[in-house]
Image (cartoon, rainbow, N blue to C red):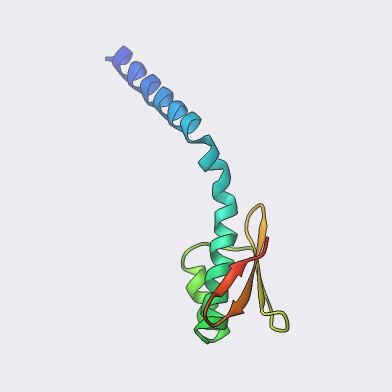
Length: 102
């Protein structure tokens, strides 16, 4: 019985290592997705839909936690900083909405 348990744990570990190896590129890009999504979502909510700042902050915060979120009203930009990176979204116009700058 002990050998079966050890063999099962070994197989799970091997399977997890194989899955991580096959999806390594996607796993590394995940931390960059969070601030990108948040900056664009907040920009759309605030500048395109015309919602209030607290409403848009709450909307974005329900998906992912962020370290920082700044609004530049003059340039109509949103700066979002996640765990390891930051992204900026800029309002283009009513038709095209917001786009990521960096």
